[in-house]
Image (cartoon, rainbow, N blue to C red):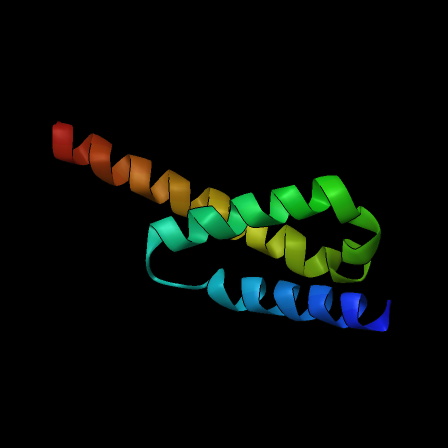
Length: 75
């Protein structure tokens, strides 16, 4: 059980690290992975709730900026 917990924590830390990647596809996949984790193991993610909220906000802002750039390009 201890190995499962430390593996989950390490996985989350790596996702948080990747959440600041410059590639929007990487950030999108990070958000998808975190949503899947929340669905199955919310109990393991509670200690990281601040980071989860921050990643969610960053993903939302990134998507907003990308959509604005494509709207300007189509204008």
